[in-house]
Image 1 (tube, rainbow, N blue to C red):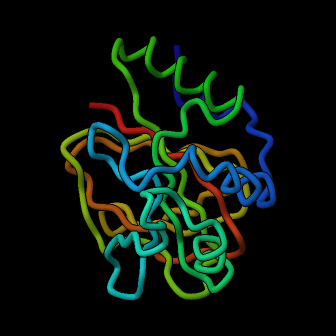
Image 2: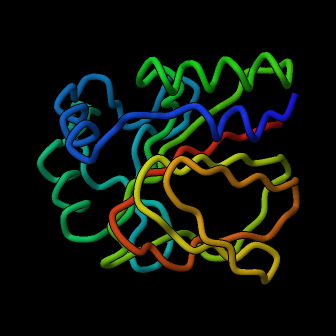
Image 3: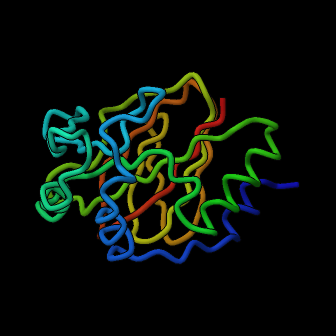
Length: 177
């Protein structure tokens, strides 16, 4: 089984407005999940994640979050494996293939102000499925363009960074321990 090809061949039919509309289910988005993982973060100019768009009750300030996106900041939306039937199918396929629970996140941005974190690596493998839009990645000093519904896969300890978003984009990143 070629898992990358299988994931690439599975279409996720999401548009920008679909993501923005889901933010209005504000109680779906606590500042942190019970296990401590943030639900949504914004990557600001310092290339660090921030969460200054939550009310005192610990749940999402929808308008402020959406404004960050419209202003051009990239958002990291965590634990989206159950976001739609298509994302669930991919998460389940990967979980079964790797015999472990796979955590998937969305990276949602326009590229106008911020794009990504600085070059970094992880102690786990990463599979990225582009849903719409396109971006250029730097993976171990090699530029790679990721476009509609295509997949990138890189092993643990691989240095990577998104260096350009060519138009509005949504990608699904799956962390494989």
